[in-house]
Amino acid sequence: MNDKKYVVFSAIVAALGGLLFGFDTAVISGTTDWLEKVFELSSFWLGFTVASALIGTIIGAIIIGKPADKYGRRNILFAVGALYFISAVGSAFAWNWYSFLFFRFIGGLGVGGASVVSPMYIAEISPAKYRGRLVAITQFNIVLGILLAFFSNYIISELNLGALEWRWMFGVEAVPALLFFLLLFRNPLSPRWLVSKGRLDEARIVLEKCGSDTGNIEEEIQAIKTSLKSEHNVLREKLLSKKYIKPIMLAIAIAMFNQLSGINAILYYAPRIFEMAGAGAKSALLQTVAVGGINLIMTMLALAIIDNFGRKKLMLIGSIGYIVSLGSVAWAFYTYGSDFNATGSAVLLVSLLVFIASHAFGQGAVIWVFISEIFPNKVRARGQALGTFTHWVMNALIAWTFPVFAEVSGGHTFAFYALCMIGQLFWVIFIMPETKGVPLEKIQKKLGIL
Image 1 (cartoon, rainbow, N blue to C red):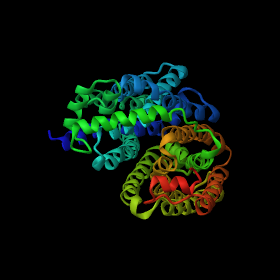
Image 2 (cartoon, helix red, strand yellow; image 1 turned 60 degrees about the vertical axis):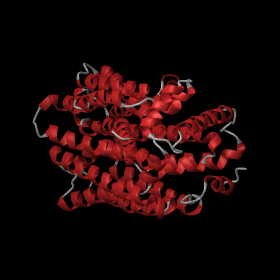
Image 3 (tube, rainbow, N blue to C red; image 1 turned 90 degrees about the horizontal axis):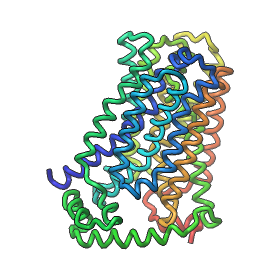
Image 4 (cartoon, rainbow, N blue to C red; image 1 turned 90 degrees about the vertical axis):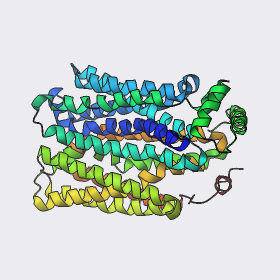
């Protein structure tokens, strides 16, 4: 296996952590009705049950950095694979609500860890000429994992397993989790981590297999050493200071708007929303597969053009699409209430497909690229961590509150999300800077960071 094939194979394996991330977060969408019945949950506690994994995700994303530095990126990915497997099997065999919450929380820790470590590992094993595309595999796999979860739920629903249906929906994740764990044995340790631990001979072997930026292994190792020394000094720089207030506010704003669109309420509760509009349980799951398919297609399109089209234009198009589609969903619920006819159901389906396309083409593609660009090198890692933390906290909040608010009024809930997206549109027009093709140093000057 030559260096390109080897590094591509290793990146694809590491990116399976992203696929499991997407699968784990979306699979619960097909089980909410069962969970409500089996555990006798109110709307409030159903929301909490869905959010339990997200609480684990927040904690996993926060605590994973130090273990990844101490034990190595690949070794932490082994732990992530084990967490996914334990969560899948444990959720499938949960004997009461508390055990189910525990195993979903364990899965959330895996999602949080994967969201940080998978792209970090891929970036560190990849030569610069492949790095952007290989890291992007993780984002693609997250969306693919969401689609696979929706499709898996639909297939299982067709098997007529009755009260065991929801258990199979969770349990099936054990198969890709085990595959991920086993394939990692073929992956190398991160050369950057090996150099940080003084294991230079092992680092040379990995760089020979994966390729280097300069073509000279010794030069590459020296460059990594210099970078590590620089980063050690950088840790003394405070992120939460007046000079970084603009990128901090930009990161918090884009992460909050991302979730205030209601995107994860729709991903987690899509079958429930379609059932609210009169669809049968199996029809609702099939319509959810269409949502996942559009998400995948539009994400691929956006990733293909983001460097030419620009971040701000994608966000403008996405914001307008959000407002139109969420407004249509709200109108449908206001008009038809709980008595949807064929026309109302069609309006809802088309509106949600436009919504998911708007998200994938706009916010979904832009958020992590934008956050990574607006912070200077000195604080970039911590700035991204802040954006990630904000994103997951808002995600948990929306997931928890959606069933409570939707029970009162589907129209009010989606009208609120539409109103938030009007706010995002004004933020994009008047505040968000365009970062396409702008050197990082010029972005810093533009934001008043000297």
